[in-house]
Amino acid sequence: MDTNSTAFEASARSNSLADKPIRLAVIIGSNREGRYAPVIADWFLSRAESFGGLDIDVVDVAEIDLPTTFSSQPSDTVQAEQAKVAERLAAADAFVVITPEYNHSYPAGLKNLIDWHNAEWHAKPVGFVSYGGLSGGLRAVEHLRQIFAELHAVTVRDTVSFHGPWGQFDEDGQHTSPEECDTAAKSLLDRLTWWAHALRDARSVRPFSA
Image (cartoon, rainbow, N blue to C red; front, side, top):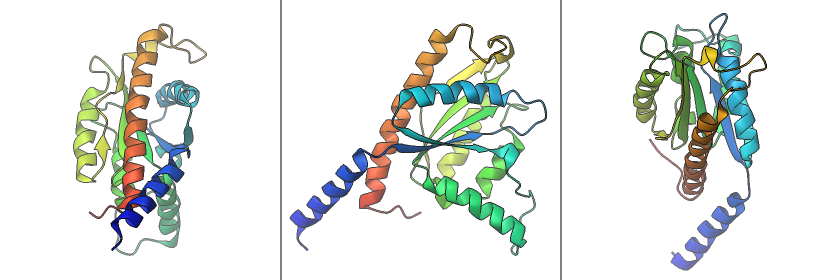
């Protein structure tokens, strides 16, 4: 094997990816009636769009119809829905999960979305934006870290968490004291995109095998 040629090809692949936007899937993890998730999601999406270099796809569990009962022979409708969502997740280079905290953990609809997929999460970074009461949703995030570790994903240390967000946003969805949370969002996106570039380059050279 010509090691110089192999190294050159790997470098060329890496350089060809460097200028491509990071494909970011933003997962809205709540499907409850009256949910506050759209306010948090709109706030984060505006920051992600301003950050630049991202091709963003919003995956909302409230718009996905996957059953909670798993079958070895799912119906054609279920297979079609799963395939459609799987294609979007597989196309992503990175994920940001927006989650509330329900009973010290994350929502059932979010777990269902995660469990219907596997390889789509492999060797990709995951960031978190959480909200809730005094904990700011951080207990939900800690549980999600364990789940994504099992799925060979890399979770980012930096998070954004809103403690009691219901009084923090005005009627137009704008945060009334944005400096701290804007800084947190930038830190999250800085770390997430670093990992997204690094892991995308790595997968192009050596496909991940679980």
